[in-house]
Image 1 (cartoon, rainbow, N blue to C red):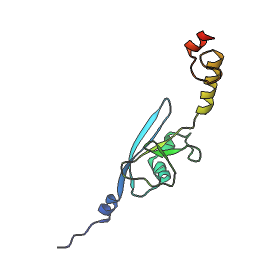
Image 2 (image 1 turned 45 degrees about the horizontal axis):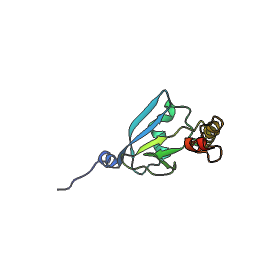
Image 3 (image 1 turned 90 degrees about the vertical axis):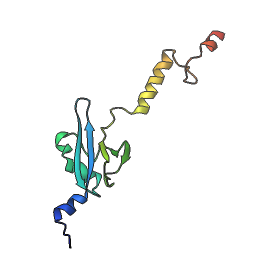
Length: 126
């Protein structure tokens, strides 16, 4: 007995489930979509429709990742992957940390030489 598969059944076999997520402080979106196996991150993002929901997303500027690991737009997605679109940083974390350390030194909360916490025993000895 010969079994024939119709094109619809074959096409469904090559589909995978993925999530595409993006959020702002006031709005978050998690989209669960079916895509063709082997699709790139960029194509999956476009297929999800999330670019229509968040007009500020610019794939030439926003970084992307899969499950909190940065990835390239040309990387292929696998079944059950979560594509995350990251917002640009408002401030450079290194610069913020540096300013905070300078302020602590000025206020006497940090040692002016080492930058570490002030040792109360050392301050009494001097």
